[in-house]
Image (cartoon, rainbow, N blue to C red; front, side, top):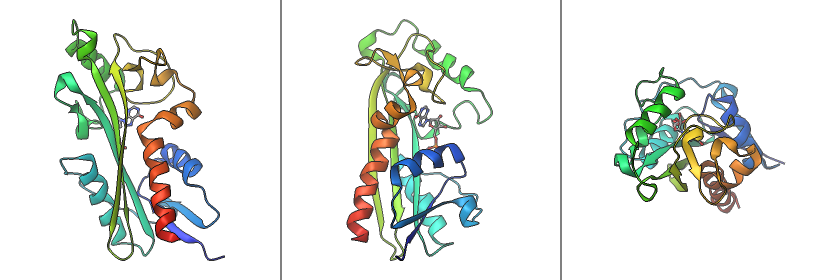
Length: 200
Ligand code: IMP
């Protein structure tokens, strides 16, 4: 069987493991940038998650004949006018620890009542196809900013992202449960459906 080559534009092996679990398919050879031998420094200067994912996918697609997937994700806090948003990774500086970033957000929301603490994680995924077309999906998980850091799992802003209906933060979910509910898990599954339609 001739396998379709798909490159996922990430150098993060942890993310790649998640992605593999969801996109795994006997018809597909899925490669990270490292595995595809591609190195590129891309400036993600779009104003939306979709723009950034599309920029990344298009730029990498110039370097390979494979289908290229790229994602962009982040946290939108409504009380902070959807910040940190597309700046989530570089918020307060790339090298600032998430302990500090999370505490800062908790401080900014000190005294803010529950109904104004709404927030969401967003994930956009773009697929640049060899013919030049770009497929896009965007998914979210809705929650709220908690009152303290909770949980040891996950990464980034997970300890302050509280899911009222589960009574815990996303840092307290098992990996399987987080994948089932998360912005990234949902976006990956939708992109998988779109790619299956495209590949026939
Ligand atoms: P990127 O999409 O890899 O550029 O990641 C953007 C940033 O958004 C990450 O560095 C985290 O700060 C934040 N982020 C995205 N998804 C999650 C998540 O599932 N949990 C916690 N933080 C996240």
